[in-house]
Amino acid sequence: MPEIGLSAGTIDYTDTGKGTGGTVVLVHGLAFDDSVWDAVVADLRGDFRVVVPVLPLGSHRRPMRPSADLSAQGVADLLAEFLERLDLHEVTLVQNDAGTAQLLPGVRDERIARLVLTSCEALDNYPPGIQGRTLVAASRLPGGLFLLLQSFRVPFLVAMGSSLGGMTARGIPYERVRRWYRPLLTDRAIRRDLARFLRSTRKDTYLRAAERLRHFDRPALVAWGAEDRMMPPATGRRLAGLLPQGRYVEIPGAGTLVPLDNPAALARELRRFIRESG
Image (cartoon, rainbow, N blue to C red; front, side, top):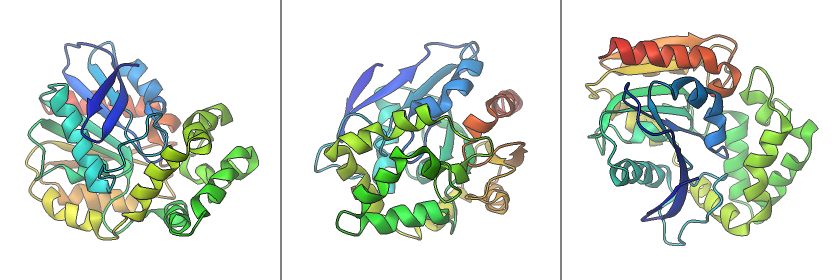
């Protein structure tokens, strides 16, 4: 994978190279990496330049600098810096699970032509579901996060509705879970980065971002998992209603992890959205 040095540290990313349909940047969520988007990248790469940064949200393999701002806004600023360093323009920015992309409109959005939000943290659903609340609580107890992460060594526990099993409608192959959680289970510095992110959680983060979304004057698509239990579709509909050019669609057979559950349907919606929004 190529890498790039940013103010917070060095991150990895994938880049399919030039495409005639413009640039699509795909953004993963908490404790996932670029591989959550593999099937969508494979679908889009023939027509678009597809770029996927590995943000410092737990599945990254290079610890960030101790002074790095790893709050939600700090990670969003790192994403904006990434777009600048690669000199990407007229980007279709697509977010899943985390709410990171919502923190750029009205702050650092000059490179964004279109915004796509798929089943992600939003409004008052932060931290989201029992999974998000448990992670935040564990991060604030001495040794709590380390102990909680040990559950990801056990496939049965991972598949439970209160864990990753509650984020998908179709299940997740355990080899993917091993890939995502290996850095957290083997590298103390990566756990430190995740703990810093979790401890900075503010419940009003995405409520404040929503006020800026009301003024985002570019095309926006909210593509929600129809079977999402962690990020309820009602939240997606409310989010779309805030965006002046927002449109709402539901992706059938998908939970929170839309790119894993139904990548073909998501890719079709992305193609249609990009085509119709010029």
